[in-house]
Length: 182
Ligand code: ZN
Image (tube, rainbow, N blue to C red; front, side):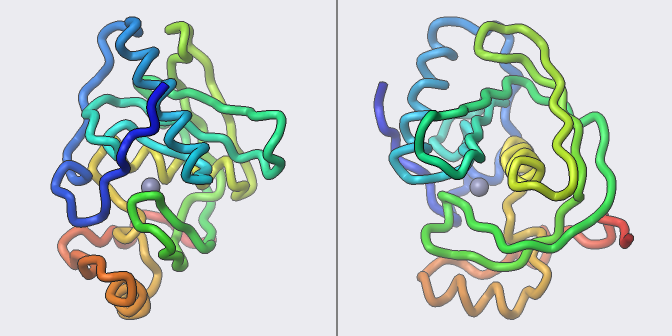
């Protein structure tokens, strides 16, 4: 297992749409181990393959608050099958070190994916839990979408990004009107 370098906001690779995994091979399993190692080392709750420069539709999360025992969940070729509700919460991202701001998300998400053994599973994450937000956040990475694109206040986000020497919000990428009001 290797701790990999996490790409920072501004790297064009973070804007690419990731490729489907055709076979959960040894190479893919090794990549997943690197992703877990990288996520835990950086104290993240989630990491998507494009964040370490690997264009695959894979992400990992561990939203348990205690350090031990670990509860990693691996999503390979995930498909969002249901979204509902809306919420605004603070979010961060390992590709935006130390940056946090308000982001609008759905409250509930149902996702279908393959596990590390290539077996299909479904997770229903409800009520705006950290797990629900993490799934939506990490899934976005596979589409080249970043949490800045969901920011509630673009000007506030720009101020925070500038403070950490990161590029500003890209107005062309902002997602509006997608999350319905309660
Ligand atoms: Zn992220």
